[in-house]
Image (tube, rainbow, N blue to C red; front, side, top):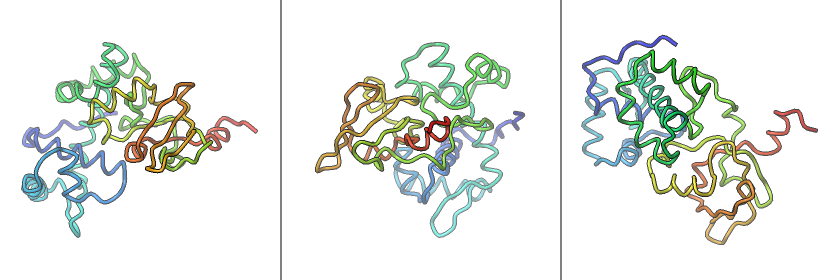
Length: 235
């Protein structure tokens, strides 16, 4: 996949905003400035000022307070997201950095990975997603996003294969460490065995017990067993 170089006049701080907006567009829903502030952990005035600059530069569009990438903004964001997710693969699959630390560590790598290194990572890993299941731009993930549901949507007794975690939970290293401890990682078979009065889910994760609040369960996307059976040709 041949990519245009990131324009040198787009500073790293602005690149972080464009990358975050790209990820939120993947997840769907409105992208208001408050959502950007929460994702990046910055103040509302800081977001307002940066969005104003990005809009002036033609990198984002703002309509009815919703923010979206312009074609030019997407040209900047796509290689950043691609390199970040490839960096995570390098760290986990080749350097054997713990899975829960990959997202945090990859931020330093995404700005220095060359196209040659990109190709080497792909040839070594054969990956089409990051270790948390999000698709590497330009590659086809091993799932159809339209067939996925959140873990919070499953009823007691229903199960499926964990396909991806949203970028929101990737930002919280302690949460990822818990997921790794409980094997809540892409590829795991997850069954809901109980739902508490407060919405807390009790899970069977490949034979291991785990519990998860509904707010976190909304960030885990599952291919339900019924869809999984159809995909694999089971009766």
